[in-house]
Amino acid sequence: MQKILIVEDEPVIRTALRRLLERHDFQVSEAGSVQEAEKDHTFNDFDLVISDLRLPGAPGTDLIKKAGDVPVLIMTSYASLRSAVDSMRMGAVDYIAKPFDHGDMVIAVQRIIADHPSGRFAEESATIDGSSPAMDGIIGNCPSMRLLFEHIKKMAPTDSTVLVLGETGTGKELVARSVHESSLRADKIMISVNCAAIPDTLIESELFGYEKGAFTGANASRMGLIEAADGGTLFLDEIGELPMEAQARLLRFIQEGEIRRIGSVHSRKVNVRLICATHRNLQILAAEGLFRKDLFYRINVLCLALPPLRERGKDILYLAERMLETQTGRAGKGIMRLSPRAIQAITTYQWPGNVRELEHAIERAVVLSNSEEIDNEGLGIDLELVNINRIRGQQSLNTGNNPSTVRTNHDPGEDLSLEDYFQRFVLEHQDSMSETELAQKLGVSRKCLWERRQRFGMPRNKGNVNNRAKITAVEEK
Image (cartoon, rainbow, N blue to C red; front, side, top):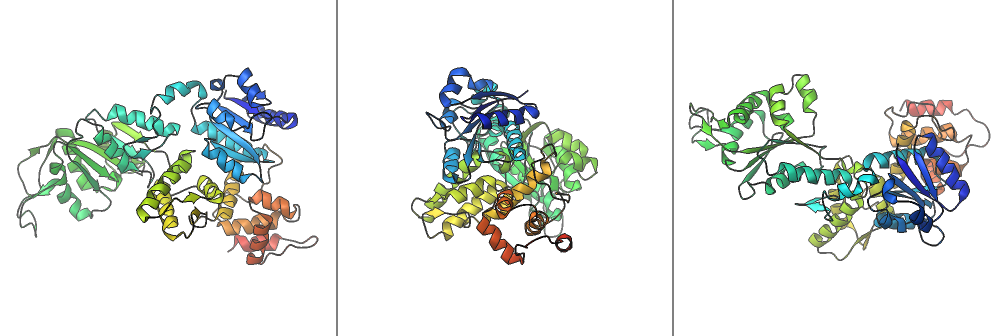
């Protein structure tokens, strides 16, 4: 059972939060101040610390350093966005605004505990990467990245084949290069091949080479990329896109350590360390007959899994600030900083394009910005839509155990745009909720709610109206 420490000076809030978490099978301890928490409890005994920002004696942010590797969730008021941002800069794993929705709190707690190892094992996990948040250009200090660094250090000295898994844009080639540069072949060549970028008709000749006259246009013999990597490392990116014919030839290279150029009758021995990467599920592809099972078993020897950016917690803001420093240097600009709204956008946006998308957003903002402060609009992120999407996702995860959570009368997982979702949410609840309540549930200001009403032609109705027809119109768009 996960253990949580609540640090809150208001007994009513503290008791209500304890009961809420206990109903969801968490073991909860309490303290009324930082000093009381430090005196009566050992932080490494807990999986999470939830603390109010404003406490008697010392602020809740003092717990961030005192708790070590135990994640700290800060509670703050809606009006204290700057304080919340400062808390995350100091190392808080996340913040939640008061008064908070019970469902939002439970979802946040479950997510944080799932993404972080227990504080009881903090010392063990801290030895993975020491005090350094980077390894050969890979930046990260969250538990999953620390584990990745540990696995790289163990796998790199071997000659075993490595399979790197991760979504597009997570940095799979950086990981492959880190494995190579930490290996005994670091002084040898590393050749990278994007299997998805080479036409099917050319992939075999590119990998294995060919002899003069092997086919029309082969006017001279040519060495293939595998042969060129002899003594070093070959990195096959997006190996899931490799044609079946090339897969069969690659299998022989892996099994026998030899290759045969197209048009040749002689094989050549090569000594190559193979690293593969893909964003696809090769096991499913193999089951569907789209990838050779024997090749999958051959390359799935040592596996490195890269987490998506949205699951890397505090790393997101750290990465953004490091990228900002790099891009301002390249652009020849002075010191630039992220505004509170930009930081809120960066830490709440889902980043489907992962690290690559974040890097491009920072680069675009630096180039186009006319001031020293970058706002969320400069990053190309609509903060209001992000908040609506976040509420929508939280509702879809809600189990229905909390009667105070607002639920819409449709399946939250159906394919609606955020604009359609906004309209339907407002139409369904405007007769039972005030404008302030609607704005809070949608995570926007009352001014933003009013502006969107004007844009969508949805003025506030007086009295009772039948909104079913309007809702249906939104659904049928």
